[in-house]
Amino acid sequence: MVQGVWFRDSCRREALATGVSGWVHNTMDGRVEAVFEGDADAVMTMVNWSMKGPARADVTGIEVVEEEPVGEQGFAIR
Image (cartoon, rainbow, N blue to C red; front, side, top):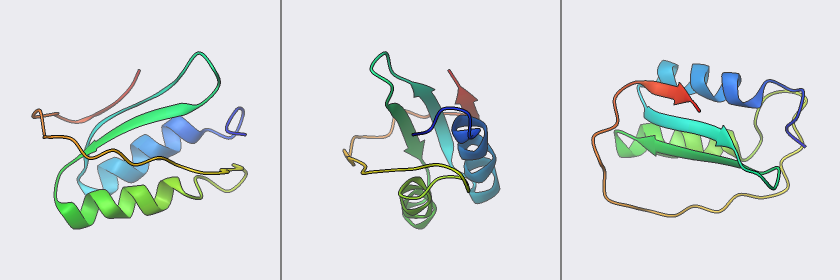
């Protein structure tokens, strides 16, 4: 469960702190989708963070899909 735990805002703050660009949003079915773009180690830091999320989140799993960078700038909550 990621509702009411500030998952998207926490994700944005973590991404900015690690120098990762991209975005995060809630899907219609209640999942969270995020795009992380940047240095490979920084992106992996965000993937690892996503596995647990903020303190009260209950993350049951993630799916990682590698794609070609598109030149994301900054980090947005959509």
